[in-house]
Length: 505
Image (cartoon, rainbow, N blue to C red; front, side, top):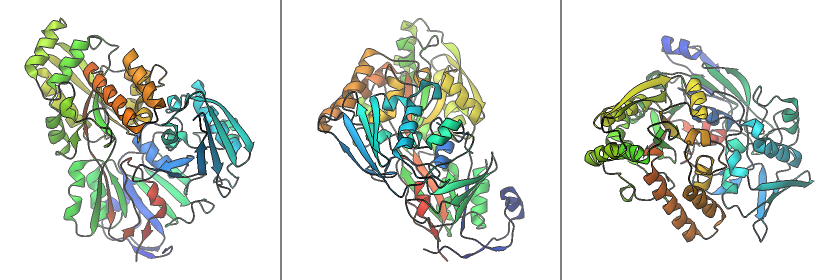
């Protein structure tokens, strides 16, 4: 691996000033990177914004990871094994794993991390994924045994998420999680200037081996057109792009490469079934019938994606044409509105986050126009991301335009919303016995064919109840200079493989 090279930063004084990059030649093995949304916090157990997760996954590590084929692979743990009855899960930890303060990662840190996640006071984003954990034993520093109240097929997938990152027990005790970042991942957070820049330095003690670069300097540029301009002048080596309008321009640049892969994340119109008149099933169904999902996709995202139902995992997803009202039917929508007592329509507000996704405003505008045809007067309220996330987590909205993360397992993906113990029930504001039962059956079932049937029924029921209106899945876009090697895009959208990228001379 080339670890030292000469980088010549070319012209572009205005963009250079925005990036804080001097227009001079410099010796550095640093990857210059840009994205349009900054992290909203540093606590890996609490963060839900994509921008936060993409940063934190370079600093923190979970026990295991999911690779580009959605297979479980080692991270802090080198091996794992379920007992014959499926009620014990034993991990062996990598003896070389160290936190970035130089201390070893031990079973005590794993136990403390999961106890923190399970503590309701923490407000952990993934708490509902781990409610089967009845106890945790640490027979030695390198061994962790999770005792489960029932067989739990998806728990390994849940443990691969950065929301299940292992943090130092000492930092938990000190109450410093979120105020500073001490992980065991490939990079250390050297500097964070919110909404401007992050500076990451290679973790020389990372158990995963030497990183391909000595560091990553990330510039936050809300205008993705400015990011592309900086790439044209070679001031930026690598960029995460969210806007398909910008991403589709990258292949026209001879010096640049676009990485474009379908992702499990989904664009969705979230209704709030706890607020009138969305409390009425027929009103929610009318909204579903009134929306032309393909038009939303074509208008907001240039057709870059495909219409989807709730499940986005290719092996488990139902053909959307088989789901309730996925073919637009305005007359049926009007009939349902009348039957619910709202023939004259109603007024509501839809919230969206500025820039995450960049298509949010356009999606809201198309939906506003479509719903007007059945008398729904929709007011659009765009918010800064941190304000939106706060409102979203409280369920403080009539409707919300959202881009939600997908997972490699449907239970891991949805239990926090659609089970009675789900820790994001305030966001979903809907649950029924059928959904909860289907989720619990799918969680415990080990036969792949039976699991697929269970989750197919779950998907059909969820689409028919219409608490949310699933729209489409899109792509993960990253752009890079052609001398950048080693990045592997994945369906989960992770940037973890930046740990092994190199800059070729």
